[in-house]
Length: 252
Image (cartoon, rainbow, N blue to C red; front, side, top):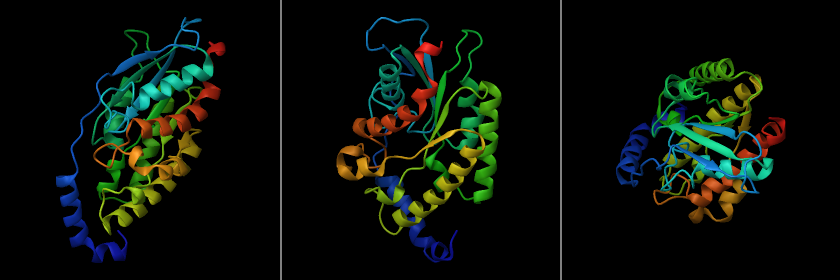
């Protein structure tokens, strides 16, 4: 923690506790799997499979069903880009950290019993890391373990995209100075995420700030923290753009 943050620690702790009390509590979206047909409707060959792992953003907090969350929206865009059917699955939980994602959702990436394994993976690594004490070195080590495990399970050919840490300094629901302090921490964590993702050949996809700034109230769900359906669409467009070149229906 920076010296200024140490001086502000009592105020920040109070603001954090008050924010947790006052921010509406949302729940995970319904639907842990679904299908998005290609543009023609009929499937030409085997479906492509998308896995979405991680925290409350991956779990679709802010929308009623994951059709309108990250999984469904990325799936529809990939189906449009590739021309083939996309089937998606979600393995995520609100409050998840990198350690939880490694110990739980990552293990669900491959389902040998049903012969299911993903052709592309999206990981939301956890804004919850902002609230945990710890050094940037520990965050770096945890990410490396997570990325090594993903590559060991899936191989190097499966495209993987990590959602960048959100611009917390822009979240209207958080009071000042808590918003600024958490925003600075988010940028620090995100810089580490960029570097480690590059080491492992994994995409890092930042949230398009311009789209959020254009209509901030529409971007957020009722809690002012998680994305709305429109917010998930913005994030999905950025993710689909980097995933679709390695996720071609004609290659299967």
